[in-house]
Amino acid sequence: MKQKIGLMGGTFDPIHVGHLLTAEAVREQFGLHRVIFIPAAQPPHKQGRKVAPAYARLLMTEMAVAGNPHFTVSRIELQRSGPSYSVDTLRQLQDEHGHEAEFYFITGADAINELSTWHEAESLLGSCHFIAATRQGCALDLERLRREFGPELVSSHIHELPTPELEISSTDIRQRVSEGRSIKYLVTTEAEAYIYKEGLYS
Ligand code: ATP
Ligand code: MG
Image (cartoon, rainbow, N blue to C red; front, side, top):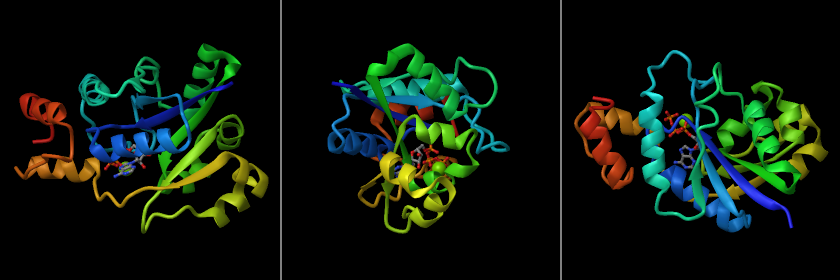
């Protein structure tokens, strides 16, 4: 049987319980063997904003997933220079794992709706699966995706998983820290302690 491996990419600046809960829900629902969290080096979509150092985002991510035997963290994008294109990451992982592995990118529906703007989008979609975590007010734009990639590719490679409404974002967490407000229960206790110890986002 093929190994089903979930890939959770993100800036993780910082990683929060929305990321963790979504990854676990997808793992369970889609019968994934494991989920690899992949902190992005130089986020192609987030140029212009100051991002916390890679080692800090990596460490917070490692601490956050430590308690889940199905979760691991990969430095694959941090070790590569230049922008972090998902298509390059996928090719590298396919080379490492051989063809007995099947990869599932886990992303918010908002990100998947913009898939056509990603580097080598069609080739990427053709060689892995996408799981769109949909939330209220954040639906999959199937009409747009079918128009851009064709209905067959979309129905066979893009899957939807409704997730609970979790109004949590890294943006909000950074804002809270800068205003001296609480981030308890939004991030793991280890990440919370690390953010204050390192003076991140203040
Ligand atoms: P920022 O506010 O800086 O954009 P973020 O909270 O969106 O950060 P990212 O690191 O950009 O976090 O997100 C990584 C992935 O996690 C993306 O695919 C994003 O859609 C998804 N994601 C982010 N927040 C949530 C959430 N609350 N529930 C489910 N998925 C989420
Ligand atoms: Mg975001």
